[in-house]
Length: 343
Image 1: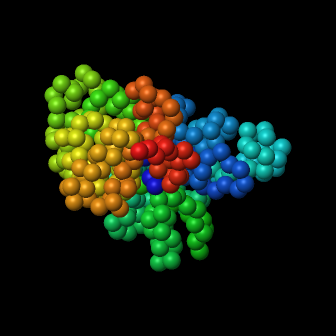
Image 2 (image 1 turned 30 degrees about the vertical axis):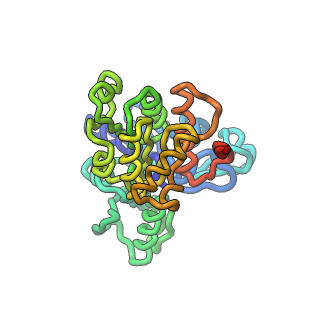
Image 3 (image 1 turned 120 degrees about the horizontal axis):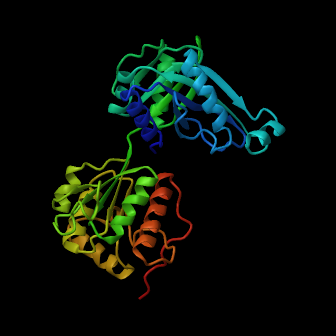
């Protein structure tokens, strides 16, 4: 699944466009219990402003200080934390946990824009050198010298969607992998949607709302949100859901929900959900069968949408949907689903 580094690199890009000097700190290796996985980022400007996390807050102050030094001397450096239990405790790590953090300056705005323009892509660099380059998933030569086996390893990391530290004949290199951003397509600009947009955005989804009704699909109700006032069937199909996309239909109107779900089921979207009671969902499945959809396709629909948290208020339903999206994103089967319909 996609990783959450895209927004942080976009922040770095915006800072570079503003003329700031920017350093990147990235977790390149972990052992034992580590609070943040490989590929976790912190971006820092020359004034000490920072976004992101490499340890959940435990060592950020020290890493920011090191990043400011990098912005002065432009020399990459690799830091290690948690060598012993005592050191781990002092750094705020779990006992026995260790991690290595690499810090370097981001100097090439065009390269960063290339990295973000057409993911999947990887920023590839030697740990001891300033030079760095972008290797794109659709091809393109890397300035960092990679033999065929090393390039294949970077491409494998890109295919898996995971950043990786790789040993080469010229020393260690790191591939910071950027995957396509997560998308959430919501059908129906209803009350639940207003809460869901904020929650889903907060966990890394770029949200688009589709609703043909002018009274619902208004900037006043969803300020700053990408709202498409189009018919849901063609609207969802036109947005081309892929394996990084979730589709949730909240209109609670068969004329809107059914064509949207049919379009979503024709795509590789990793999550498809629909609002409604268990009984209304059973009726929905029958209507979709009449459209020619088989049971294997219909089994992809999470209905009623969201984890059964017990809440019924719009914000509580939005929370239940967001929780299930996160579970689906990480391939976790929810431990508690809605009970089966009786009778």
